[in-house]
Length: 190
Image (cartoon, rainbow, N blue to C red; front, side):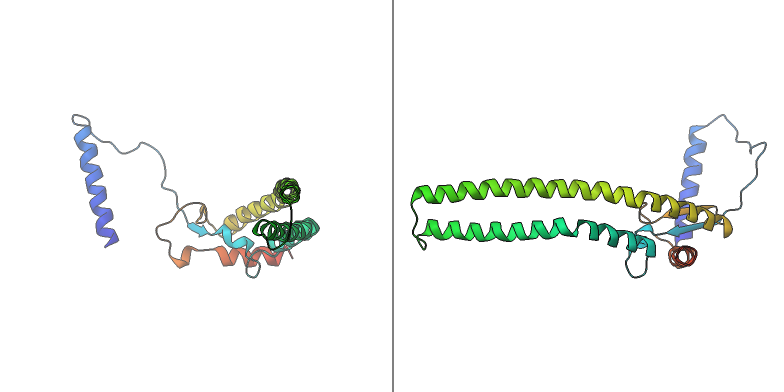
């Protein structure tokens, strides 16, 4: 079925091209060779799979997460304190806890101030995490790129398409080299 559609598409394109070039004759190219090629597909998103991906990616992400665990713990504790303070304010406003309007406002002001500090600290942590992630992963990504290039050359592959980056309508399992590359990379880079 695909071949019929491809044939129809080629006939349509040929007809359109000849209709546009009336009076001109087509001549085959004077020089050039038809390259022999072998195309493969890889899904780079699988590289970061903690169980079946590239082990150095998992190790790097674990190292990164360990570096930022203390700040994450601190942010989690602050979030719990803010939630408790918010509940306390609700009780004060609802009359469950006796409080004057001034006491309620003071508690709200205290909550707002701590919430702003929490938000700033969280944003700083996200920015620092992304910066550090880039610092750690960029050299690894470059190394994987070089290894993928060498893998392609060693296996006679002339083009590798990243199915994670380029939407593919269809790719046969026989052209998917993801698992083979990951196994090769992990074997060569323990």
